[in-house]
Length: 198
Image (cartoon, rainbow, N blue to C red; front, side):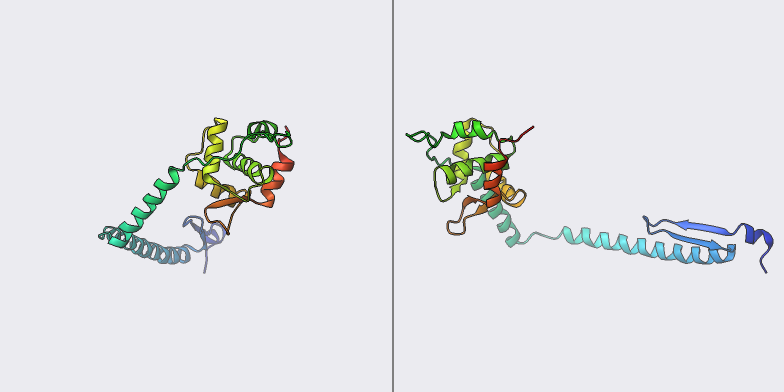
């Protein structure tokens, strides 16, 4: 039979296994019994985790296969190619009837911010909507950056991919691999949202 003191002050234990929280409350015998069980399970789990980590470390030190090395070389070659994009020129001058501004005048009018996605979308709009070319290349973007004396992104290809995936301003031209087109969202951004107010 429980004493009056045990009923008024039951024994309590709180275990926080990284917010898994197990709370025990009851007589001292009850709490001690389950606390001992949980301690045993925790120790067993920690030992299992240590063994798993040791096995992972050991497997990561195994010799590298030739196929892995070939893949790494291929990635390095791709990086080298994308880093050295050659400028491809396009018509940046105003039309003779002045209906189409020069690239510089168009950029001055639209005032894209310094984000690569905004600048690339604006250049793409100029090339495809004003100059009526079907698509544009990373080399065209490189040429525009040089012409406008802008600090170019470190990786123009990655900037185009980000403009496609994160902002959805660009689309890859399926008919002409390696070339880009402006998405409908990109057209709206340049045509209606630029220059940005505020």
